[in-house]
Image (cartoon, rainbow, N blue to C red):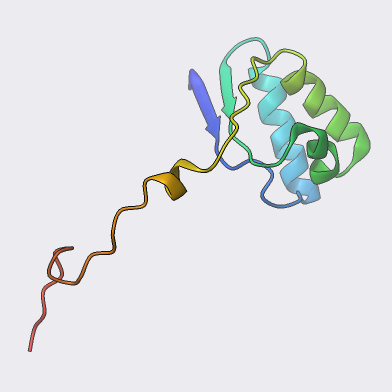
Length: 97
């Protein structure tokens, strides 16, 4: 695919197999295809989250040093635009008796 999106990257630490697969994916895409990564975990903590230092270095070298970084600040948009709670009739639920 031309654009691979890794959403919520870093929500948990990686197993050996996940590290290996992530390295293979990033290596294959490096300078060939686009990869978009969203994360709430600061980049400074990605190394520890990936785990194995040598593999983490290789993965992050390919991601971080050739990236366009966009840092968002402020409260979550979900908090700002929370719609009012709906009752069963308003959200399309059907009550059967």
